[in-house]
Amino acid sequence: MEPLKVKLEAFEGPLDLLLHLIEKNKVDIYDIPIVEITDQYLEYIRAMEYEDMNVMSEFLVMAATLLDIKCRMLLPKQVDEEGEEEDPRSELVEQLLQYKLYKYMSYELKDRQMDAGYAMYKEATIPKEVAEYRPPIDYSELIGDMTLNKLHEVFKSIVRRQEDRIDPIRNQFGKIEKDEINLDEKQHYIEQYLYDHQKADFQALLEKSNSKMEVIVTFLVILELMKLGKITVEQEENFDKINIVWEEDAEVSAGALEMTAMS
Amino acid sequence: MEREKAEQVLEAVLFTMGESVELSKLAEVIEEDKNTTKEILYGMKEKYKEQNRGMDIIELDGSFQMCSRAELYDYLIKIAKNPRKYVLSDTVLETLSIIAYKQPVTKVEIEKIRGVSCDFAVNKLLEYNLIMELGRLDAPGRPLLFGTTEEFLRSFGVKSLEDLPELNAEQIEEFKQEAEEEAQLKLDI
Image 1 (spheres, rainbow over the protein chains, first blue to last red):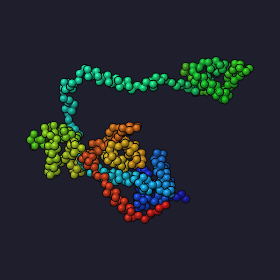
Image 2: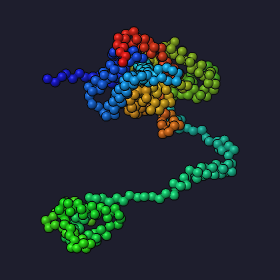
Image 3: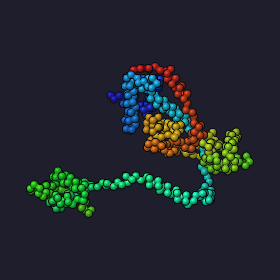
Image 4: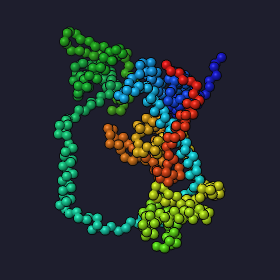
């Protein structure tokens, strides 16, 4: 018989869950029994229905932190500059207290929101001409004591700033562009070519290429077609011409036929 | 301007504008200085209350707005349809309270307190116009800084940021003492 699945309270985050456990166990937040709390925490997250990876990962980070603290509690306590013992739980306690504080304040705010909700407001009903009215511009005030010379100075300083921004070294770098050759398209093209000509010279086929990338792709296509058994490759003597022969009953794959219809 | 005339003018302005109006603009209209204007407005608010008038004047961080008296809400909804109020989830509320008290604050700082990512909550709050971007922090990555808006003050009945309910450190002391008194488990490794 399947065990009854108890629906667990949804916790908003690991701190929320931790606070709940601490309150449930009625322990002193300043003296958390790390073993107990960690065990219960792990039990909870195991039972949690699997959610969003992001949410789960936050819980797991906290689980790891708890285990880390548990380990550190086993070791002799570090002594800080003032000669006081450092409690490995203290950072966590700080965090929990601060979270608790804001959680509490959020309830206060919620109450306030309820009360403030009873007042209603009116929208503005000003005629358009009034809303769009702008006082006439006083040009002498606007320009003030700006002269043409001053304006020129401002312009020069902007241009100087612009020049300073150009990195003299990096500016000289050239551009490297990526050659985009589609393997599939090339394969279909070559298949169709070989089907039409039945026989082809390997070298000639490669010579048609425009770039190193194209040569490589063409070569790969030939290998692929060999693997598929659609062609055979012959060479009469060492270093002689390499001939590519289309197999009699080999079929051109559907894609290639479409391609020729388009061209 | 004569007091009575000033009150009349202010009343008309606040009614027509509907939205909040800055104190400086109101002062200009009645040709008085800001302090006097403020005093007159507070006087009007008192008067409205004493005379049980249907409207009220609220203050929002140095601006003033006219609104209906809260106690009359039940009558108003019979005629004026209340725009649907958004309900803020606990997560969003917590994030909002952190921003309200710690502004200006970055997402990272918020997440440190809550222990979880706050992207969703921050986006929702931006959508409701309860928070806004206040600029960027001068630190690596130049992260965005967030703070509350006038709409936040209005929706939560807060006059200004100084008026927020105080972060009650005493309350926390109480919590701690309660926990200590009821402590049963005190396992030390």
